[in-house]
Image (cartoon, rainbow, N blue to C red; front, side, top):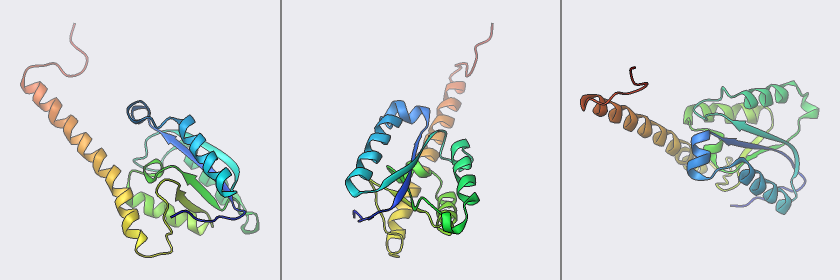
Length: 168
């Protein structure tokens, strides 16, 4: 579902974590190009571009914290932008509980979060189910990856391999 945003203003949020950038090609430049192209196509003015190189396991991210602090400083009549855009919901968060809370915080500040490649109208109740899938899938991937690493390291120790820095 592509929205007609009219004359809205947006901030662009571009996030990578180093391993994902290498593995899946989510480079900051690529995300910036796609977001700016989307804004040009739909007549959305870009106010700020926020680049983050930090994990999305929680919202304790330096650039996000600064962005939120600046949003909260604005008076109600000066509340711009009206949108915060990112490419996919996993760029926003990989923790469903934190993401729902942050969406509420943004909405209270009159800012609508939106993933351009997974657009949802959150005013439609059924879209909240789809949002739950978008948000929980990356969280499950993270949990599965952590378990695989844990079991792999355990097996390696049982096989006598040295984990970590080898002794002198």
